[in-house]
Image (cartoon, rainbow, N blue to C red; front, side, top):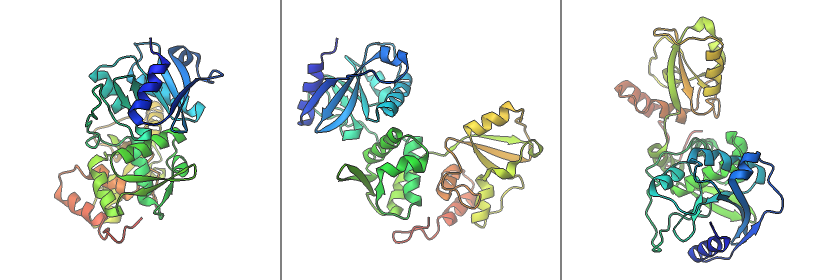
Amino acid sequence: MIELNSVEKYIQKTLGVMVEVFPTNTPLAVPVFINQLYKFYRVTIHDKRYLMMVIDSAEVTPPLIKKHLDIVENEANLNAFIVLEKIDSNFRDKLVNQHIPFVVPGNQMYLPFIGVDFRERFGSLVGYERKSEKLSVAAQLTALYFLHSDSDVYRQADIALKINYTKMSASRAVDELYEHGLIKILKEGKENLITLNDNRYVFWESLKKVMRSPVKHRYSIESFRIDYKKFTTAGLSALERLTDITAPINPTIAMTIKEWGRLYDAGVAIVKHGDVDVEVWAYDPDLFSREGLVNKYSLYLSLMSNPDERIEMALDQLLEGDNFGTWPR
């Protein structure tokens, strides 16, 4: 049984700030099973409000917790964290990999939205190496938004609209970039303002180490089955339009997982030697696209692991002229 007083004292002692825990006055408008799995409390940490979710069941897995957390945060419009009575290192690592904030009173704490990493029971900070991890999709899209913006200062409130994510997901994406040392978060009244830690050239060079290819799958299909020209041009077809490389005759297009699912359900078959190459992306390839082409940073990421020297040279040409002073959008 978790005592609320122990949670309050642990956070307060660890952070050195005032912490208050209050019961929620009314049930959250979330599915009944979520209200059954968790007990909810409103928490004030250093005059900022959060939502605390105490887990009643030991059988909830991190992927399920992640889904429940998203639902609750969207309903409450507050950053939330979970509280567990005990935890092993394997479960802890899974929570971190899912970017799930948590507190184990007297033992460990992971609250990235207020800049807190692990603290073990002996009081020493554990150097959990986050920088080696790849960015989540939302964090990668947020970074791409920064690269495509003409501004040097970004309002956190604008990010969700730009990347088509919820406010809470966008907030966690900002926290993630901050954890990787890529951005600074400034306060202006109640609003968060974001700036890059360095110029765009250094920002991009750092991003390449933690970004991943947007391509989840590559398929070959027959062109007569779809109107492929309505999709965004990607792969070598896009690279040919932007550099001196010559692409294969088959056009390459990009689409979301949902778009591919609809085509597949409609009977579009995967073949060995089709005349259209399809890339299924982890995020919408239309985001930040121009003139029917996927954005050049995502294009770079989609091809950077290709060992072909001609492609390597073309990728260098793709970003040619990008330096400390100028950075084409």
